[in-house]
Amino acid sequence: MKSLASILLSAPLLAAGCVPAPPTTQSETPLAATSLGLASEAMPSISERWWMEFGDPQLDRLVGEALAGSPTLAAALARVRAAQAQVSAARSQLYPQVNLDGNETLQRLSANYIYPPPLGGHGNWIGSVQANLTWSLDFFGKQQAQIDRARAAAQAAALDALAARLVLAGSVTQAYIAYGRARDLVAVAEQTVTQQQDILKLTTDRVSSGLETEAAQQQSRALAAFARQDLVLARAVRETAVHQIALLIGRGADAYALDKPQLAITALTLPEILPADLLARRADIAAAQARIETAAKGREVARRAFYPDINLLGLVGVAAISGVGPLLAANAVQYGVGAAIHLPIFDAGKLRANLAGATADVDAAIADYNQAVVTSVREAADAITSLRAAQGRLAEQSTAMSAAQASFDLARERYTSGLIPQLNVLSAEDLVIRAQRQSATLNADLLSARVTLVMALGGGFTPPPSSSVPSPSLQGVSSAPGAKP
Image 1 (cartoon, rainbow, N blue to C red):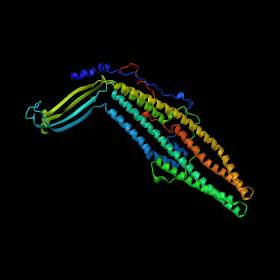
Image 2: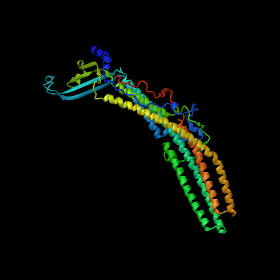
Image 3: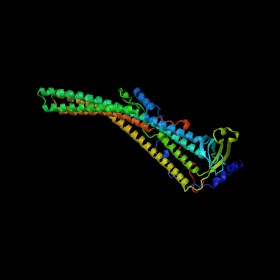
Image 4: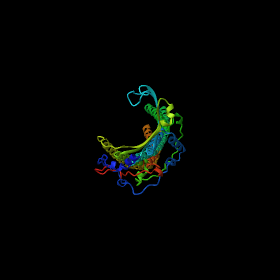
């Protein structure tokens, strides 16, 4: 025990002579929110279940099914559990490790060694049962640094899962909006077929009365066929949209029956400027921050590898030659206690290279964070621009729709009376069809723009209080030039 105490007391002296850490420092700096030109005011919070503000029970059900059964989200949650397991594994290294080993082997012992006859020169059964204890004394914080790294990685995985949840909810909502647009376009196509059939009948009657040419009748027949083709395509697009929704919610053909969407187009009041708290609202930005922390803790693990390892050792067991029976005798007991130390002296630059690589990982994490930050600002700005454009276009659509319908009604009436040629009716009809399609598309575009902006603003993300995201600070992990561990 005297030698054990002397090893423990000499640990600080041993640390002073270990391999010096190379002078590595980070070259990247995280972007600050104040440098991004964001507004001075924060926006009101968004509900965690923001999609419910559209007031469509069918959409609420579909998003709920997606969050409960999507394979994509299940994979993200599995990564969270794996990261949490890594935290438990790292934490276990702080505690004593005990294992039990036993064996029984038939072995011929040398007659010219330490065993005299009759043991030497003959085959004998050699058995042992031994419990071993190892306890790493974390004098230099190696295990704690690994725990900190694992915790930061688990936090990043949890935030990635929250971001995946937002993306999934947004994707289902966008697909549902696309399904609604497809249904509206099918209705427009059906109405167009009806209109073309009416014009064909009217033209046929005029041909029979000698008021129109055969060419006009054939033209009407071709346009009616084209309208039916458009209807077939519109129905196919509608079915494909249903298939996409089923995929997102993790279902098959059993989910292909959907009712007409009932989405409130005025839902989700959103800002028209970039909010000051944009970065704090997004789970993916918080995850990027956590990955900076993970890399910084990984660098700390690499730095502390320059320090020695000191372990307490212990064993107790029994061992005997000539079978299992002698193992039960009192004099078969063996035990021991001691300490072990591992001190890196020369490793051909391995530890230095590991530290340099860990420093590069920090720089890469910061660069990824900065890219995510500027991307988030662009996404939010684009979403606001798209929303404004959709609102402006929709404001003019009612005027265009009314004028086109009035023009068509007047042209058809005058054509029936024989006052204008068929070409005028077809031109007016084309305007109506275009206006109808535009109405269906613009309504969907406005809804889609709102959802896109919600996603760009981070949805209803709120970091859990028990696992708040650290800021991307690198204090305490840089080594000064020429520093030693």
